Length: 112
Image (cartoon, rainbow, N blue to C red):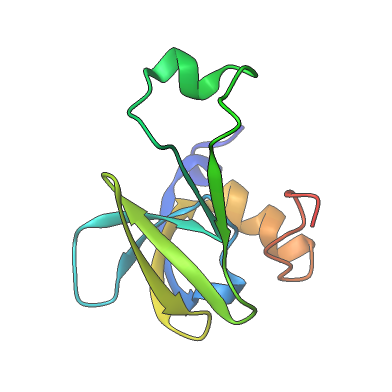
């Protein structure tokens, strides 16, 4: 892979056009968030190994965003935003090119 494909690029897009799981920032900020369409909550704190295992307790709750809404998640905090909210997505030239080839479909890799 050439050096220019590994180069980081920041683009401003509506949240609903950015791939889920991407790291984003608000247009006026520097704090990074992960873009999600669902939140998983556990009744008691779990270790990293417990969270990543298939043996997750049945008490886990999942909140799925309504259509037109997404979540910004950072360090255990989550905020709901409209999918039209403009965010800054910093990605590599390679990933941006792949995203453009998928016809701007943010769910192309997520199976949605």
